[in-house]
Image 1 (cartoon, rainbow, N blue to C red):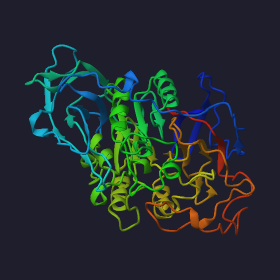
Image 2 (image 1 turned 180 degrees about the vertical axis):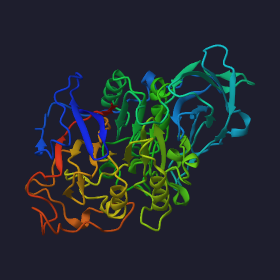
Image 3 (image 1 turned 120 degrees about the vertical axis):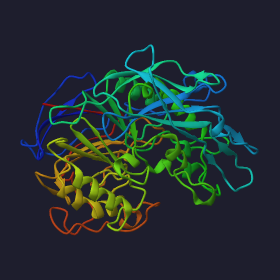
Image 4 (image 1 turned 60 degrees about the horizontal axis):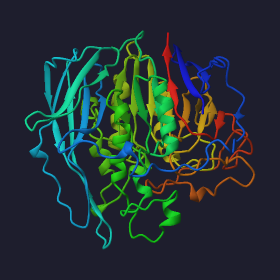
Length: 500
């Protein structure tokens, strides 16, 4: 999968360079040179092989702390450079027929931090919680998490290295000293050096390859565009499969094995404890349980700048990273014009000052412009509801996951090439154990029945035959669509750079 570097020129001019895995720039086309002739990279059948999950015996996913010492430590951003969130877990999870949730009030949530490694002169406190994943069926194991802590640090300097410890000093149970770097102050000449974009990551040996290469690119920020650890490919007894519905079609509810979340947090801690990570929900985070509760692990484990950005939900929020305003949207919560998310989006976009944050980037999980058979036009209802609004405010780039492949569009609006439409980039296979997307909807025999395309969770039907252009009267093109600039079946990540 190519890496993506974006050079700042103007709102309707986008410069993209494709960088190979050896980081050699092979060309710097701009949208002034486009639209580009569609390219499909031939499938390398030996490239990926079979993705295998890390087992619970792998040292990288095992618990190595004692008692209530912090683990699964991560940093995430608030809305502006002067604030970040520190999150961690104390105490171990429980899984089985008889579980007793830990009491969050028994362990304090404290972060000591400062610009010097010693002494750490500042102190912040936060809140804590536990969550349960419960199933009302005989034979299924229930889960309760360790104590999850979230603490917000404020008053930080821009583009500055801070050291910190987290935990409860009264036990004592404090972590080792870690560090993070704040984002640059917002402004037209101020940007993070590199931002990593990855989706559908999972926790396989391919995942480790992706993460190693991603960290080798020294990002200042990581965006995970949904589908984090794939705990829902497992039964509650820890038995997993590449395809849940294929292997476990008779289960009374779609089970999950929640310890996979803990394994993922432990594996990622060397990265997330020093590089801020921002996450948006994907379909694998639905995780339905008792009383039809959903997204409980996702909403509990990560800190989101929802309140700071005027949102009432962990499913959608926004933040600044230097001169970039990021909008994280929810593809699995109501998005029609009467919904809270849409109304919040209108207000958030109206507040953006393009003189301060010239670049406007949106991200959510299911792509609107994907030419693969897998999930083809699945998010059409979301597109018809929100595309006009994003176009009106001149969103520059949109990042998605969900489709397990890489695809980059030309600038497009309503399936028509448009010099002021955004570029859509799908970075949908970070290495998870599900199959890679290979078949294209425009290839003979691959166009899906329209009735099969709506998202199962959100429902609705909005994907009709095209009414104009080369595919008029058809549900699929009979060749790679003009709006698709480049597509490649591979796993990996993207690197997003904004340069002056």
